[in-house]
Length: 373
Ligand code: SAH
Ligand code: SF4
Image (cartoon, rainbow, N blue to C red; front, side, top):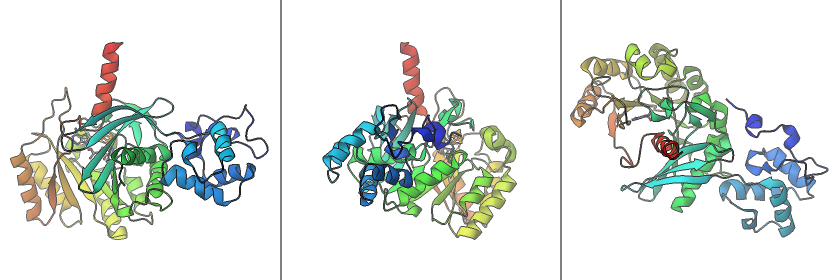
């Protein structure tokens, strides 16, 4: 995982110093990459009173300003100076698909050219956003378009945050919930993900309630244990996909070292410690994890836990032999789980007509590029 400093492609030397913030040899630094203290120091070095820090933070985080000109409560000369010595990051939209159901999928590119997907899903006056936490993923799940395309780098917290604000702007509405279910494994980028969660939750950020912020992990056990200790009420989802070790190893090779037994223990501790209900994600794949044995194992794994099971219709990956189960089979799973007191729902797939599975828009975009070269 890249650290903030590495991602910023520089060292602490890149920080404008107190005595000569405008020196042309100093690298232009993105305001989003600065900590509160660094920003305060920069503004103080420019002779600004301390309340400016909060004003600038409000512009960049809460209001998602895309230019210094928008920052109308800052003196014009300060805006000019900031524009010379800092950048405002953001992202560039390089593809967008709009679904018949109203959801919109975006491919956003960051300053270094790395692109990730995110999705906005409106329902009434609510807007849920699905964000990526890494460009690519090392876990290599066989049903996942992201996993098939390898790994580029982890995202910084501000790049994760940017996706939420970008989508909110595009819909011209407030984002009411965020799921970390785009590309990448959030718990392979824990610190940046936590920072993004906190910024999304903060009244000085997006102000989204912690319970409306959901992280989905493929089951990185040590990080589930760590997450259980965070003071906020963030929501946890775990991609289970099979409660039989051999099947799970095949479907999700990247987490084979975190056995189902260890996962079960960690989740029991999570529930005991937090009192919160976790979700298991289970994409039903015909003949692979939807057999009678699989259902029985899943019932045994979940019985007596607080967990809710989300049965997901597998998104067809082009070129893959894995096929979704029938609706009838999904209903039998709901029934079986219900018979042992486990709540389960069949998740209706949003944006099924727009390369819905994570990584598919990116894959399509890149293949298009390859063909035209
Ligand atoms: N890496 C994390 C979060 C991103 S994947 C994780 O694996 O949980 C988000 C969800 O999409 C996971 O539950 C994942 O298993 C699921 N997913 C990936 N590819 C899919 C596909 N082709 N069909 C249905 N769900 C898929
Ligand atoms: Fe990575 Fe999640 Fe895809 Fe698995 S399902 S390859 S963990 S993004």
